[in-house]
Structure formats: structure tokens, C-alpha cells
Length: 572
View 1 (cartoon, rainbow, N blue to C red):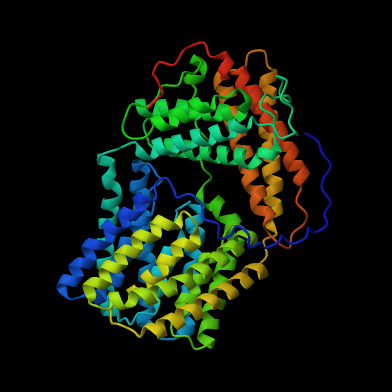
View 2 (view 1 turned 30 degrees about the horizontal axis):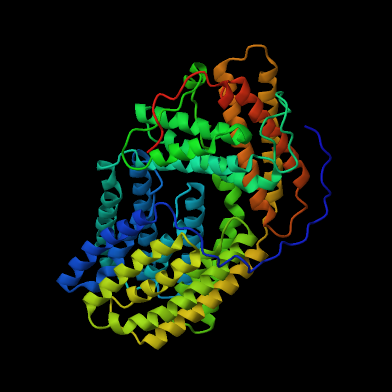
């Protein structure tokens, strides 16, 4: 593919809109899983401490219990290891915080250590794709522990309590495997099928793509940039489904059936005009519950060569591109904490955690998160004022209110981050009262001040720490997409390409195009960088998706080439 490079002049800074930032969306399909899990993980330890009259230790018990919020989108085979690492990461951050707090009372040192911990937690969570909720919960735990009165002889006991509740959280999150062992993979596959159906509904035509032709540069589905968001969402869902399936270990009969369904979703994205959207949705519905997995037919050669997505990059390779984000987090959290100290606010770690929660893939998304955080926290403070009289009726009421807010946070946060913050804020304020009640007005004032300071200073730091590598990553993604398309085109030109090679080329091209779109979207929201090659990205996507369609036709994967009937009714 050849195209002239884009001009090198710096583009205007992206606008920071308010419209849509607070829009309420649909809840996550599995919102109830982290909601129920965190309640089940928090309740027994806290009620036990309540019965023993040691609710002052609840902060350390909560540290482990909150790990139950993680890894609900992972298959159980992968979840066991990933959640264990989350618990160990939480214990590591907590240990550093507790030891530091026991060795020094200098708020300046404590804020500095908290900022470095926040940066490390952010980068590791992003590099390992740990989340939601990502680094925010880990940073909340370690930052709060930094400012808790502590002595060295108390540290082992507090860590032991956190480890015990972390182990309990692990058991809570793994327990559903006894009832629905393939639940996460089934959900991931259903999501991919529904996303492919949504794109198939558009027909893939947006005025830019050629809907005819069968060669490597003339595909079937078009490139319809008017429907690019739906197509990008579809490929992201398919990629996530492959990651889920590849994490399940041995290829069982269930996994093989799910693989065939994911291939059908891929083919629908490559040739949306020929896809049967209703059949895709019927398959997705059939994956609910524990019934048999629908059997999607594939040509024998393709059925034998399901290779999945390419292996993930090693951890060190994923850490490099996150360097600007680490610098933003460390710099912004430190400045927010020091600004809070300079203003004489009693809990600078709240400002630090607020700043840590803002940093997203680019400036535009960071701005949106800042607005959501401020609005949610301010409303949450008002909710705390209304609930405080009830919570102060007794320690049992305090624990029950925390449980209610932990459930509500997971119920609402997938609709919009600010809605979840409405519950997280009063829960965090109530946790501070486990060791003793505080004046409600004082807590509210400190939280509002720290929220505003953390958001303003944190966003200013994000603007100040530039990310000029974003454009370089787009160039690398473009080259990777071009190489993958050219490789697939060469195979298509052969009279009889090997089925395994053709399947690998199609899958590699699909992954490269998904990476290109994600990289371009992330770079588009950054400031202070050279102009992005938007036209080259569009052309690469157009030609790449046409080649995908041509490859699917050559493999005999398109609907009009099916020679077998479905062996099982997909209707639920």
C-alpha cells in the first residue's frame, strides 16, 4: 500500500467536551458478579471483627477482601493465577506502606512513597490488563495505610489479616467454577457474537469501501468508515474472546465448539453484508446458562486449523510504552498530595488517590475521568451526609452501610464511572470511621477539598507530562498492518496455499488491524505531538478489511459457501 505521508505540523489540541461525559449507559452483563463477590468477601471478616470488638482492624481486612473485585472476566484456569497475583500485589503495596509508616511520620516522605507506589501499580495493572477496577483499589489501600498510625511490631499481624482475607476473596471468586466451569468463555464468545451481529446490521457500507471483488484488494464487506466504531468494537470483542479461550488450557469439546463460534463472528466482521445477524444473536442467546454449546459448521480444513490469536508480548515489552503514563501518575500524585499538605488538609492521601484514578490512555479520556470523579465524589459526599446519622447508630449499622455501598458501587459503576463514585465515596468515608467516629462536617470538607485539589493538580500534571511516543506507535502499528496484509495477499496469489498458513495470516491480519485502530484512537486524544497520519490509517484499514474478506472467501468460510447444515439448533 502506498500513500503520501501526512504533514508534520502539530495538530490542534483535542477539545475537552462536557457533553456525554456523564451520560448513563447500560450496565455490564456481569455487574452482579463483582457486586455479590465483594459483599461475600467483606461480610464474614468484618462481622467477625465486629463480634470480637476489633473493628479498628477492619481497614486491613478490607484490603484483602477488595481483591474480590478483580478477574471476573477471566476463565477460571487463568483466574486462579491472576487473582493470586492481585492478592500478592496488594500485600506487597500494603507491606511497603505499613513499614514506611512505622519508620517515619514525615508527610512529605509518605506522599512521595505513595506517588511511587501509585505509578508502579498503574503501570503493572495496565501492562498485565488487570482490571477493572485496575490500580485504583490497590492505590487506595496502600495510600490509606501510609497515613495509618503504625509500629513495626504491628506490621506482621496486619499483613497476616490482609493475607487471610485475600485468600478468602480468592475462594469467593473461584467458587462459581463448581457450578458453571466454562461461564467466562461462554460470555466472552456471546459478546463477540453480539458485537459482530451489531456490525452486520450496518451491512458494513459507509461510502468508502468497495463492496465487490474477490481479490486481495477488493473485498466483500466494504470498509465503511461510517461504521468504524461498530467494526472496531466487534474486533475488540473477538480478540477478547480468543484471549479467553486460549487461557483455558486444554482444548476440550466445549472450547472447540466456542472456537468455531468465534470464527463465525470473525467472518461476519470481514463480510458483514453476507452475515446472518439473527443467527449470530441466536447463538449468543444459546450460550446463556449451562446448556449445550451451539455447533457452528466450518469447512474441514478450517475446522482443523483453529490457531487463535498470536501470543501476547512479554511483560517487559508492554512496560516500555507505558513510561509516559508512569511519569504522569508519579508526578501528578506527588503534586496532588503536596498541594493538599500545603493547604493544611488532614488527609492528603485522598488527593493522591483522586489523581491516581484520573490517568487513562490519553488526555481526552483523562479529562472525562476527571469530570466524572469530581461530580461523583461531590454527590457522594451529600449521600454520606444523609446516611451518616444511620451509620452512627452503632458499629453494626456502620458495617451494614459499607456492605450496601460496596454492592451499589458495582451495580452503578459500569453504567458510568461517576455513578459508581456516588457509592464509593460514602463507603470510603465510612471506612475511616471503623476506628472511631469523626465529625461529619469535617470529613465532608476534607473530602471535597482533596477531590478538587487532586483532580485539578492531577489533570494539570497529565497535560504537562507529554506523550510524544504516541505518534511513533501509530507508525509501527501501520507498518505491522501493512506487513500482515501483504503476507495474506501473497498467500491468496498462490494457487494452493496451505490451510494452516491461510488461517494464520487471516488471524494475524485481524489482530494487526485491531491493534492499529486501538493505537490510533489512543493517539488521537493526546496533546503536543505531530500530526497523525489519519489518511494512511483509513487506507490501511480499508485495504486490510478487504483482504480479510477475500481470505475468508478463499477459505470457504462465507455463508454462501457452507456445504453442511448446522448439526444442532442454535435457538435457546
